[in-house]
Image (cartoon, rainbow, N blue to C red; front, top):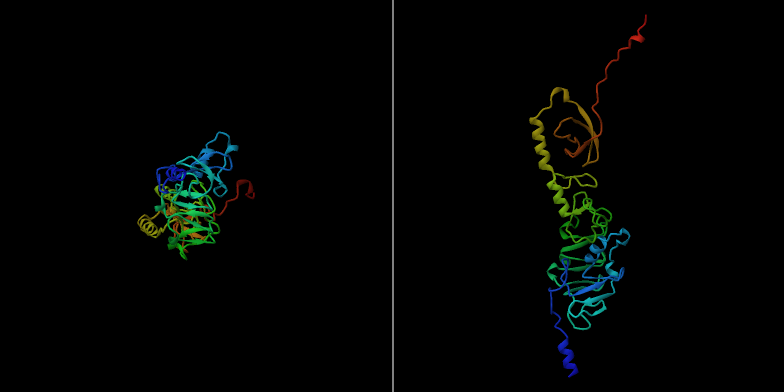
Length: 282
């Protein structure tokens, strides 16, 4: 009878699947944060709560690998990190990583653990490769097709300044190799900002825009008094040179880009000086 009673108390592993969790993850457990001994559904919930504390000294982030205890959301039993609840037998996460102490019932995300990154990623292992120079996983289409920047993903988004390496937001790799949130890049485009915030190189292919500027400049000659040259620095090829002044843009003669900046004032022609009256000889 005791064995039958125990069997009745235990749940099917799929019991409650996707019915528990938070806005970040569907999971059937909560975690006890080792840093503050508080209970949260996930590390993001913890980080959001601690970052809103009134005392800045209390702000801190949870280190996922240090989690030791979890609480089953079905039976409320606290226990050591494991896939299946030791008390009621439910699967606390359809996807479970014992390294990251990570649980998620929504396996359509195609979660996988990257040993080189040291954390779990989404999107399917077969669709990504780890770039050791950039220090992160990139989509297969970027293999041998991107400019490597040392540890480019182990920095902050240059727009919102969120740490990129473990951000849950989508990230884009620019032509220059720098990284930025996709949402932030779209916001830049809406503001007609096309340069990388870090190096000022074009974030997208601007060839069509340069051709349009060529046509507009050819159709709008400057007045005679404004037909002079200025010194420029090209953000694309990093060369300096001279370009005809025009209010629409200053074109690099080396790479034909208009992504330039003016680095000198107008060069005035030499003017012969006339001695002052005190300097005239008697």
